[in-house]
Image (cartoon, rainbow, N blue to C red; front, side, top):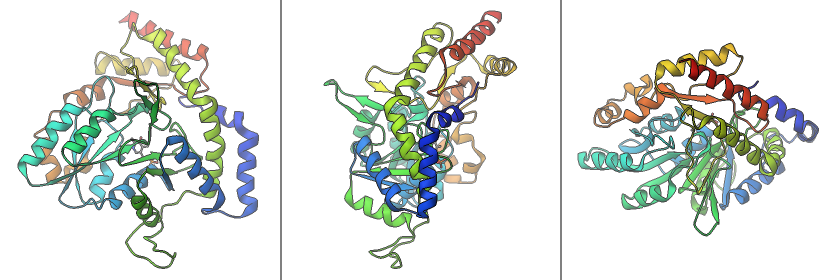
Length: 387
Ligand SMILES: *Cc1c(COP(=O)(O)O)cnc(C)c1O
């Protein structure tokens, strides 16, 4: 059993993917061009925003957004305490201070009440300029964007959606229409790292926005701060492009993602829910939310029972993973930034700390069979009855 079965996906799409890769190689058009342009148009239209700018990876996508907004020294950027390192790294990288915020125990996403508290603490102190919020769609579930938008407007903050894990998810409204992940926030980003909901065969990423002005700046930043012409450089940028070969692969995988993978992975989530919701705490998805299930993450009673369960699964050759074992505010990398640590001492991270001790992510991908789900769940139940 695979944690995320990329081989099964390849065998399913082999003829088309091989064709796509060979097409790029025989065209010898390796950077930019038709493949990248078509992919960007397809992604923007699916997500429902005006612009998609692809780039080299999801971390660069976040960095480019920070750069486009001119985030820098003296700025405070609010980041969930329970997320992948990148979400906070990019803030420090541009010289600003990440302010870590506790998350909601049910959704794993940034907690709106804690966010508002953190904004007030930083504002009251008056040392930093509250500039932006990075809301992460953790494990595939969109963050609480209705509330987040309100808070961002109230405190005049820019809202960045880190949709690295969220691509394909959505939030519906009462009328049955919905908005997709990567359309929330003033700018949104995603990652095409192989294990993400929509992955390529290496590194890749994208930035989404409705703003023509930011889109221009982002395209410039991605190519060394180019001006109207390539060798006219009007700002300090970076070299962050998606390879044509990755774009060609993504075009094939994107079709499968939209046509059936997203439905199939939701079916797998239902199989897990049916078998596990009475025995462990299963992921809670509110009615109008739709997850792309980057991870299926259960919660155990405490660290000991989580760790023993993981060992037991391993004995049965069932892969599992702990995302994440350490809160952002405990990462040594942020410890050197006195400003960052100063704010850490003023916040409460009890939920993130508990999650780090109790979460366990189970095998999850669109090619998982009901039989394999049954094996995983039976093993979990045996363990729990033995306790
Ligand atoms: C994977 C991930 C990123 C970074 O994406 P890369 O393509 O690996 O650089 C950023 N944020 C979150 C939440 C992620 O899961």
